[in-house]
Length: 302
Image (cartoon, rainbow, N blue to C red; front, side):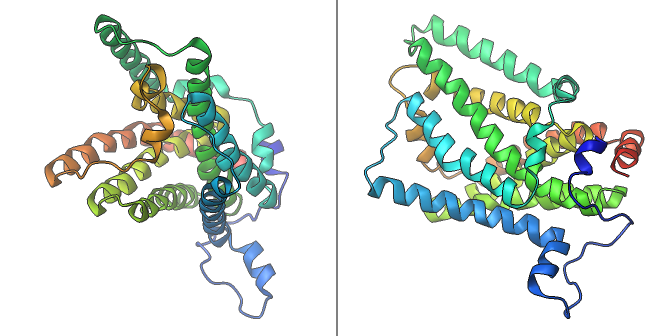
């Protein structure tokens, strides 16, 4: 872990989150010193690039189509490539070189992996019994690649850029680590507010913000513990694989069509249930970063 954190400058010492710094310094100097501002800026840049590309590419005749291969290419162009460029700009691209602890990261997320595998099996058995026609093998493979790239783009942004940026400033204390995790997770959750612009109801959007924050805390906990972005991208992708199973595996459905649609307005009682269900992600997060393991993380960071 030392080879990772040594790549960029790391400020040692238990400092409070720096929302404001010395006003006498130039803007660039203040920006470089303010990890919170850098993390939020990375998030904003990503969303701006995504929205611009999504609007601009159709205007120049680029159509990804509605099949799984099109969804794969769309995710690569609109999210993966931009977020990698952002990681280079913010000097966190070295996280992509770190492949150690892949197995340990998967083990930390074992409960979710077991759930996704079991759910996929049940869904497959039910679909086969109902005679639902499967898509071609290449299309199913493209669907698997698509959901992995969804996980990679979002986890590289959330953990590999935002959390990593914060940790390099505040990762030498327990409060600093949790501040980094919460900043990244809440920021990622708030990113879903843009769905209101697509006509989604306020209630549905609030649910997405809260549940995405809970899930983000879980993935960030695994990342902070093991520092492997590929493993959490895989687990994230497995969750999306189950969530978009019908659209990605069976004929007559499109991942991209559903991906762009807004959700049906949810009742308040359903909203509470969804929030409570997703709050379960907080349990393994606190277990993963229990006191003993958190101290180990701090030792490695220092």
